[in-house]
Image 1 (tube, helix red, strand yellow):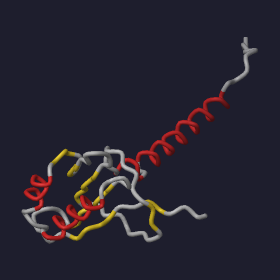
Image 2 (tube, rainbow, N blue to C red):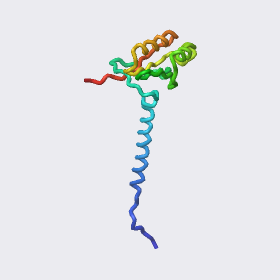
Image 3 (tube, rainbow, N blue to C red):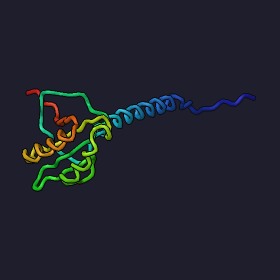
Image 4 (tube, rainbow, N blue to C red):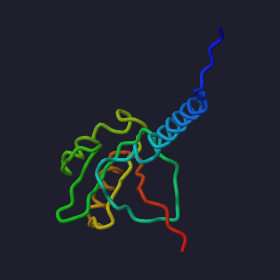
Length: 137
């Protein structure tokens, strides 16, 4: 005797579920590989600029926060200007590719930005000033 089922086959949903899983994984991959992950954890509002440079992959990052008094972070670690000089005194040969990215907040004192720039350049590093793209108006 041949038995037949009266229930419908739900195979269409299984194909859709696997496709949906793959789409979520691709979306997750693109979110995790974005520039937001590479950036420092200290929030600063960098000024806008029309010029653009390629990203420096293995550069050291100095972050200068706004506010009074402004704080200096070297690779996400709070430092003073004296400690920053000691960190960079080894020279570019001992640290990565010799590039330093300076992420200075718009509200940071200009004199402090120049002081840090002089420390970086004085120790033989090439300095990159971080900016964000200018919005078309």
